[in-house]
Image: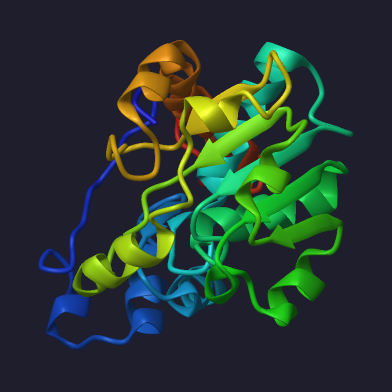
Length: 249
């Protein structure tokens, strides 16, 4: 936001009345009169939707338990930057196929016409309601090797997401076989991209050798979050009535 010439205010729960029991819709009504937009990172998807409904300002989902859309936009930009259009390509997601990151990949597959393979144990695959909502070509497969074969992109994420710290031992045991390593990369296309949305736990969802061999892609992917999220800010700024915008915003 600063690079685009605007100003930012960072508010944690202790800085606003939500930390003292105020309803989200009331906080939204107040902030909607003071700012031109909001970026929210929280647990419940409903909280962001309620804020957007009552604030009247553009609201960006920076992460919830349900979705991680800004990350996936940066990931897709990275694929297109390095390999051209993502349309028609095969993306294999390795790990928790029911996670917020995997779910946003599902939504993207339905909109951008590529094949998404979710390589996950059965109990970590998305529920039918999410598959129906996403549409597109999404294939759930517990056979990791089969899911990786011929892929254009191998993608993984940490096994223990924000708020799941108490499940770490169980999730590590369940997802232990579902990781990206040198042997798995050999099953994908020779020029396949290996991607990780970071932070990475070497030796869990990806081995150290594979991460370092693909560090240029992974850290380009990280950098692209900056550029893509500036593009998102520019896009939502067009939704703000001109009379509300101040110079430089």
